[in-house]
Length: 388
Image (cartoon, rainbow, N blue to C red):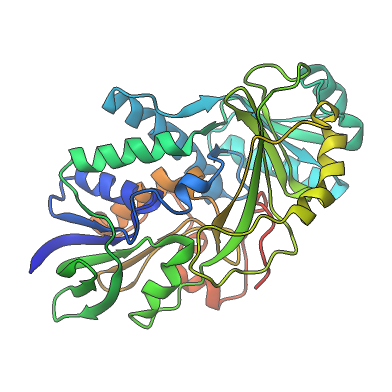
């Protein structure tokens, strides 16, 4: 029976980055069990936005660290990092958002992010392809950007294999049994033993893996939709800055020679299936279309190149989980920001495993037990998710 120091359930962005950071810090016997293939699920179905303009201290810091880690890994491997810096405008549509955004600018600046508030006259000068008469202003960070998910999955998979991590694909975890010291993990590719087990199973598995040990992990899956327009309108410059209309739950970024639009329906309900391929909601697309065409008039009538759905993992407060609810059993979840925070979440979970603590992040924003208490903090800059 194979034995490991750490066995990680889930070979997506979170699980692979956790393995990478553990290996970098000297752990040699690491296994990753992925029931499909590395990066197959939510990771490569995402839009890849990397935003440092979070709505809480934890969100800001995780975005900042992840941006740096993506770039560092590219340099380490001698490969493209997949990260493109274009800047990001997060748009305020109401007086309530404007007031909250001013407070968040101060928070981000305290965390070392170059973030600023801009009024519509300045925004019209900087970003003329947006109809700023519809909005009250926006926050902006110049070095925000996005990654191409397929490149990210390639790089982190290459990195963990290079570090000597044992990656078991098509290896579904069926049961986890506590031992006097460690755990026995039964899978479709045999039985393993490990001193520590990490639940990094994402939107389609985190809750199920926790339940194997009687631990409630409040992670659910919600449908997110993405379309791309193959040609970029002449009004939009190459590598145009990203924009996020928070109140309506949609954002745009460059994509190859065109434009990518991501959107979440605030009426979406949790999806209990185990499927990654979900039906595209064309009715909602058509309902939202007049809004984004009014925001960026040059996109009106553009043909669609691709359209797909992905499952985003979400927590009730949109914040992550980095915790050890049972001795030797760890939970890491992204709260809807797997590509945005994955590298940093892996780094901080490795810190918890090896140093038995998590530094620089508020405890009340990452521990699992917070969900049994009155809600105090939430990430205010997030796509709409189901309330249950």
